[in-house]
Image (cartoon, rainbow, N blue to C red; front, side, top):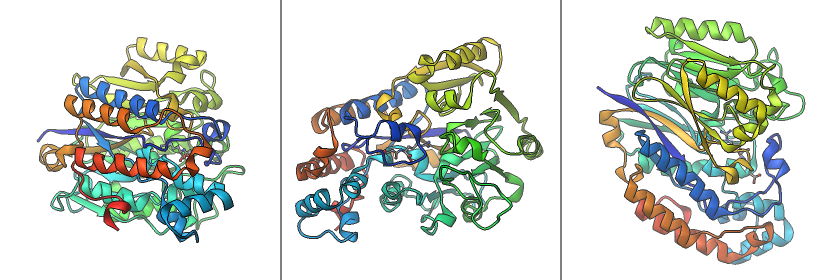
Length: 448
Ligand code: SUG
């Protein structure tokens, strides 16, 4: 049976703003308080989805969340009508209002970890929503994420959904941003590669000194157990703590994998040789031929990688088996990175083409092409079982761009977040969106 990898991209929500909420994420910190353009952000994301669809890839869309999250504010003691809750929070605790307004659910690589049916014990596709518990503004995403994923992948015969792990730092889980899968073919059993930043219970593993390591080994192991993965089909590796301290807050900022290929920076991991050997051995047992492309620090430094998001790219397999890299505009703007990419594609190696996308609105919050998509490998039967409303088509693209034009503002500053009208705009837009994407009732304002 034919299988493929579907990219479900996060649709940017109407409250996209620069809150400076993510300590350890250089872009989020340095663009804090700038004016954002939610309309442009959503259209940039949609343009990428359309381009991939037109290249022949199956493309999906994942809905944004209701913001401000009034229920989250109520749970922190603000009371009264929704408008009063927002206004009190603005007066007494602006950082909490900003967090409750974040459109961070757009970075759906952090929505969940997904294991394809060929890897799991019960032969279903497994999803574990990420608790994102390192940052308050992200920790409030998972209940709605679970409902949205449930509405997209509803058929229990094919899809199994797990609730987020316990919401404590020891089980900090950031989803697919620290997870890659290697395989010969998407429909065959593969090797799932879990990268963690620290161990919560084992002091032998080093930890970064400056910035938080968001993903723990114990969280990754729990996800592998929940999904029923075989020991032979799993490799764990530790991120180099020094690169976390240099701003690599997720592994997908320093490495990307697809098919039989890992594209990574020389400084990305600890014990790299051992890790590569294990990946080669385990994929080899499944008949695969693991290959790695290491970007030397002498050519591209970690700082250039963080600034350009070279590795936050989408590595895609084309119909002829060759590979394509989707990178953000910032890669072209960086001389060393662009030179490296020119050399890479002209060397006759696996990666033949680079395509550049303008995702500046998201990039300024530390979200590149890879952050914006959740990968789900599906066979034909499973793909047919996905809610068809969320699969991108030319008419859906047109409808969504019109929807964005109608509902989104083209400028948003921190002071605008205190305007209760923004909540009404967001709810009106999302109510329409659930009808467009045929999701049913998934948002708190639709349920309560
Ligand atoms: O969690 N930024 C996100 C970016 C997530 C990128 N995802 C991946 N690498 N997969 C984060 O740090 C910034 C929000 C703000 O500052 O307003 C933010 O949440």
